[in-house]
Image 1 (cartoon, rainbow, N blue to C red):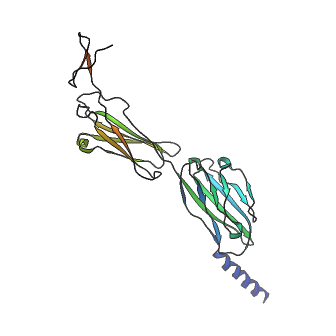
Image 2: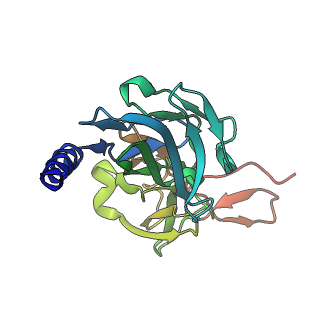
Image 3: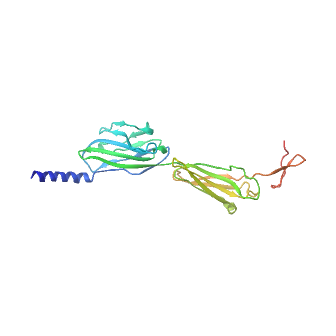
Length: 260
């Protein structure tokens, strides 16, 4: 009879703990912003002993504890690494809520965060929270080498979307002038997971191309909206020096000021 009673009690405990689990979820944040990592233990009436947070990130891939929270909400920081001064407990142990907030998120913070609830008598319940960090591109539109009027195709301008994660999409708006132009785009991936994209606008540097207005358009996950950058194509002229001590543009068809 005693054996049957023990089996019944064990079965009841097993059924109660089978539904007990920790809920969390995947989080994505833009570099420099704050992020809340939420976790909650549900379907239990057992006594909470401790909440433990662990992390494995770009900064340190070895998984390790960095924060302990006792049932009264008192926190203890352990081996925080780059989180020093940037992490705080925002949960409520009495509600089995173990959430934390990380401020001024860095790319090095990307990785797996683990929330562990230790309860008595059944033990520990865990969930992993992957944190993805997005990095917006640094955009510039320039002409590395000033195009000189001529008959051969050259790079008229270059749009650079540097250091983005994930890779930025770069396109051009060229209006009616677009039929005379083409683009060549390449990218370089860096060891920190970011990518730099260079999109070159190529065409023949004619007089008609001078002062044409084009736009570089950049799309990327970390950007709230599509970004457009205006650029005016500048074609430079060739000069020759004549005995009369003035310069004449042999292609652009107009006379320039004398040399000093």
